[in-house]
Image (cartoon, rainbow, N blue to C red; front, side, top):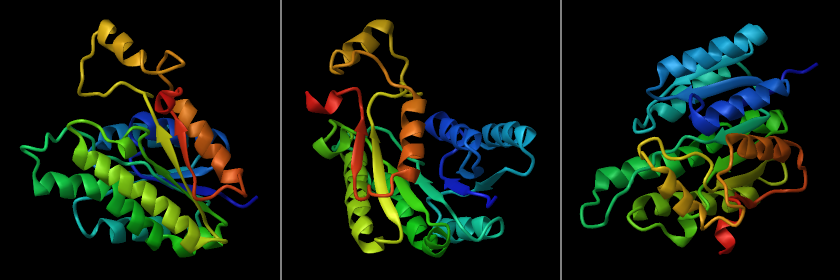
Length: 243
């Protein structure tokens, strides 16, 4: 049986961690990137390799460094010469009220949310073509319509959705490119929301509850086999975007 490899950015925590585990359960070999979460990354690597030997590999890179694309390209190529899936999941997310927004914040948010997904896709075209692979970008259900105090982040995610649709046309028919657009899946790590604040936010979600990382990873897995879907941005937000 031919080994199937997935490469995922930002795989040490939250949605990325769940996606690594989900794809591993389905028989994929996992290669994932982390930036500063070395301990968490090594824990996941050990967990998955204890289940199946030599099935999980980790690579470190800082997306604010211009050399990161080449670093990851070489790292992946040292493990495999083909990819079944590229998931551009890594993301910076923080408020930038326009009065104090800076160029460095713009560069940081663009790097993780748009620039690196674009150029990692470019770098892995030969491997994706050989593996009959696909690209899955992770967007944000609210970003295209704008988020108050998050104009830089919203702009970066909107750029990612445009990149998704453009590359779907450019890389067809060999490589499919789609995006998943999550809503309230996990509460932000840097916000200590009270139960009442959580309930207030969920009043804007027709399903009335927060989602789970498995809602995202299961859709990602589906998209790997959906041979007639490309150029789509699929919202997973409990109906939030239709209000």
